[in-house]
Image 1 (tube, one colour):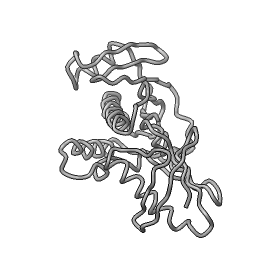
Image 2 (cartoon, rainbow, N blue to C red):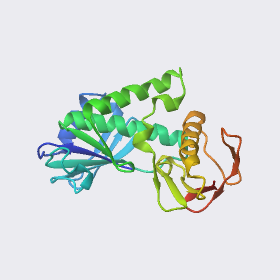
Image 3 (cartoon, rainbow, N blue to C red):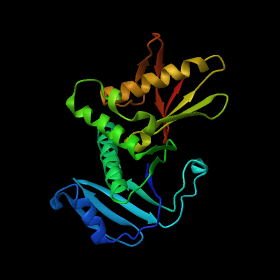
Image 4 (cartoon, helix red, strand yellow):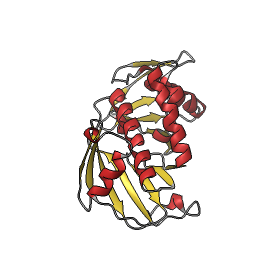
Length: 231
C-alpha cells in the first residue's frame, strides 16, 4: 500500500529541504534522509519510507472533477510487517509521515492506494488524532483505527467476494466463496472478520474454525495469496 500526496503547485525537493521540514517536527536524532533525485529513503523514528516526487498530476480516474493539482508525492513503507500488530503500527507511522510531508509541502489531499479513497488534510489530521487514542487502551482498536481507508471489499463474480487490505498489514487477503442464497451473510461476515482481527491483534491460520455471531461454524483454508472460506 502507498499514499499519494497532492500538491497545488510544483515544488523543488532537496535533501536540505527535506531535513529542514522534518526538523520542524522532531529532533534531528530521530530521522535520516538518504536523498536521491528520483526516489529518496527517509528513516523516521525507527521506520523506513520511500519518497518519490512526480512533477505532474497523478493519472488517477478517481480524481477527475474532485480537485486540481499540479504535482504529487508517493510515500510508502520500505519492507513489510511480520504480522497484523506490526502492520497496524507501520501503517499508523506511515500516515503520520504522510501528514508531516503534506504540511511541509502545502498539500491539499491524500490518497490511499488499496481502497482508492481520498481525504483532505483536515480529515487526515482527524483520523490520526483519533488513532492516537489507540495507545490509551480505553476501548477496542477498531473504534479508533481508520479501517475504511485500509480495508476494502469487492464482489468479483456471482460466487466470489474479495476482502483486500490485510496483505498490506503483514497477512493475507480473504477470498470468500458465496452460494447464491448466502450473499446476505457477506456484510455481517466481513464486519466480524475486521473487528476480530483489529480488536484481538490476531489473524487466522489454515484449519481455524470461525464461529459467526449466528452460531454457524466456518473452516478456513489457504492459497498462496488468500485466506479461503466458504459460505
